[in-house]
Length: 87
Image 1 (cartoon, rainbow, N blue to C red):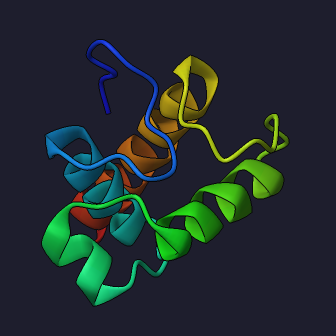
Image 2: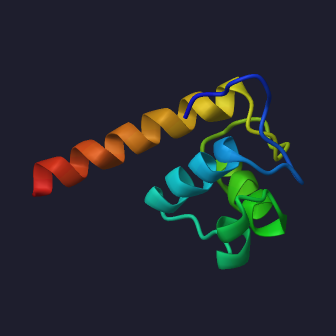
């Protein structure tokens, strides 16, 4: 996940939100279908971000800034390596 010119937070929409939701799904976090279809950071995406931040000892603020984005990258990379290894 690469933050382009903004932190990703509640009520935003766009391609960066779509990437957040996709990568959250890779990590087993549930994003409501209606939010994913609209690429919208709604209540469900917020809950997924809060859960992720709590799980990995990050600042729990429901904002995907640099620290949260870096940790998502680490976990997605680990997940993809595990999948490749098991294939």
